[in-house]
Amino acid sequence: VDAGCALLGGETAEMPGFYDVGKYDLAGFAVGVCEKDDIISVKDIKEGDVLIGLSSTGVHSNGFSLVRKVFDVENNTELTQPCAALGGVSIAQTLLTPTKLYVKSILALVSEIEVKGISHITGGGFYENIPRSLPDGLTAKIDRSALKILPIFDLIAKTGNIPERDMFNTYNMGVGMSVVVSREDAPRALDILRAHGEDAYLIGEIVEGDEGVVFC
Image 1 (cartoon, rainbow, N blue to C red):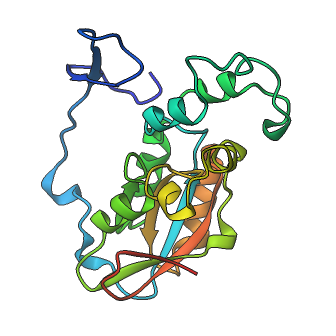
Image 2: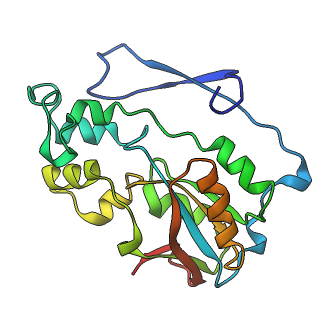
């Protein structure tokens, strides 16, 4: 309902530590159809374009094997207790927060603004997902101080003693999706996204380089 589509297929997934031996998960998925003229191409992205981040609701659906190890979910009896670092919400409840779906907001955006690139920040975090939406020779320069990193990610990093780069290479860190638009279109793009309920804000810009993603 939230995405306005039907589930027409599926896949199996193995998650060590979550399912018993011989058990597996069946997940549904949908395949989209798009007119060729409407396909978003990275060829128009250029230096000086900006990245807009759309806030996530939490861990979403990636990195749970690490989450389970960090919080020792098999033995930790405090997971359902209020957690001060999470504003009094338990770790368990926070981890069960549903994944944010951006379909309707993005469709509204592309209907009014030239969107040059879109990255869904899933497994692989910033380092693996954002470069996929950039042409060769260009890099996403992310303003680290602008990011609205959710408390759950700070807690994961602190509890597991996980380096920041590894966190940004595993989790969405509070940004579930990013879009690339021209600098001139950014104010209008932000207005559209916010009008559709998104916490959207500028997170960086496109610069020359082959690093894929850099933080400043």
